Image (cartoon, rainbow, N blue to C red; front, top):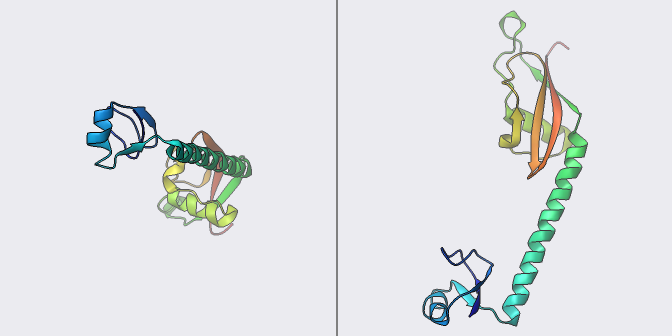
Length: 150
């Protein structure tokens, strides 16, 4: 019997998949526990529509991420830090601060965990930063750290 799974079932399949199971397993286990439903025309149509909507969502998110990557690639982001003793940076510039500056300057909301720093930014200067915007889509930009006097 063909069924559409409503939840992940170990050994059978994942949620939203079409599975071929024995009649007894479907009637006595899956249906009473509302883990699956019979693969009739309506269920097949809903499955097809949900797959198409997932695909459309992924395509639109990827397109948006590529547009943001084109906007960010090669840009230089200027960060202002406090000078400590000997002209060194007081503290460090974190990925959280970089993500906040990207949102403020470019309007691109990036999670701080998606900002990849080559090294810790503890001195003034220019650093290379990679921002992961989506699966397989990333942008490379430079972060220039200056002090307040400039």
